[in-house]
Image (cartoon, rainbow over all chains, first blue to last red; front, side, top):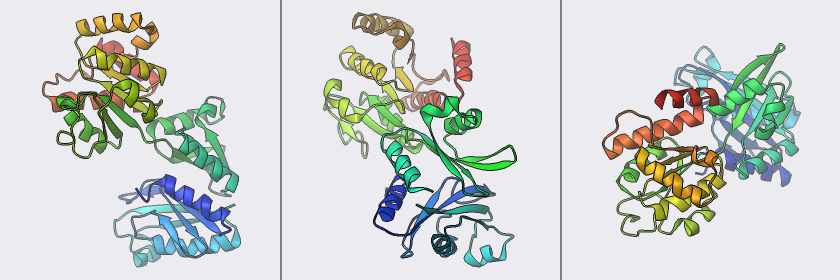
Length: 107
Length: 237
């Protein structure tokens, strides 16, 4: 399968070794009916290319934007998306759950 | 994540060895714990629990919130015997996320018509098994009822330390099997690892029910702590 974690993490390693800036975003906590379990991850490179999934498509766009910041700054970030959060509504976490996503730079 | 950590993580995963990444989410501090080092880790209780469940999660230790990300290899199921039970067992195991392979040298049994979409190896165990890389994260089930096929396969499973080994047959059949295996050099401790009669005792009758009993037993071995497993065995005996 294309999006199995092994391929994602292998891609992160390959991108990094090719000289790309790379970030890893990982679901660390979920409440309610979150679509992807803790440990699910998304890797992003400085082109904005990404692989994997943290929410089945709902908040990936927002995570990628934040990840580009993390690649630039090197500082890890904790993101939270949920029904109580207006931004989350805007990006469309329609499942009624809440997720926390840890974004860190690779390298 | 440091590149070094990522490289190590990918190497362990490629070798099908479990790894846990421990991250302090407040500051991004991180370390990689290999399965073999869990026993001597300060977080051994938490780490072994998460690994057994195959689930990532958070723990709080000394005021620090740590995320334990578990990378466990996908469990494999090797079925010796392309028999009626296997036709029910293979799809059930796949729905439980096992990588399933069916081995049977009898081509009339090991046919794609009987096993659509399941990897089939129509060879004797000595040829079929070495390339399958049977390992600790493999459940191994022998259901041909034919000693010529089941016995060498079981010897291979002992050798590879499969987390579950089951073989079809009554207690009487199993006693005879134990004798044969001993004659071929198997240790008593190996023979004791065979679950026979196979599957949890749920009164299974049909092939599908036997498949459920087998997968229930395999799930218990995979998920329950070792102590509860031995208790369960005593009660069943």
